[in-house]
Length: 170
Image (tube, rainbow, N blue to C red; front, side, top):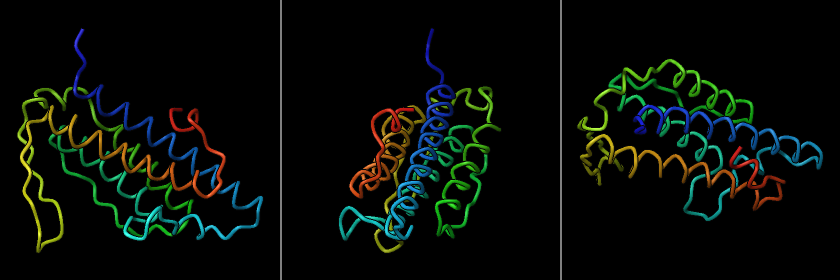
């Protein structure tokens, strides 16, 4: 039995987003129990040149929906980056999961050989990346989703939220 592109992407990203929402719930409970302003967590960074927790969640969700949409050859849903609360971030994650649930294995047929072209970076330094579908999923989509999800986890742990490996893995 071979692993389909659909199975390697949609269920994996759905699980990550579900686990992310659990971690966000724990962050809210942590902050509320200790009477900590939620913005102390939402705007936290591991380093001055890294994105905030808010942006890490946005990118994790965007990478999941973008990767799957490109592989399924459908339009990528546009989400405005207006989240400012944990509830907003959970809603974005849920909206991403809802989009992923609309995708079918049939839409991913041939995706392993599909040509994927990305323009990345700021306009003045933009790079064009070319991938074949399977390389795009394995070497761009999955690592990026996990990276940004890991940054959310690391930011929460760094700030004292009691999340652990079981929360991360689900």
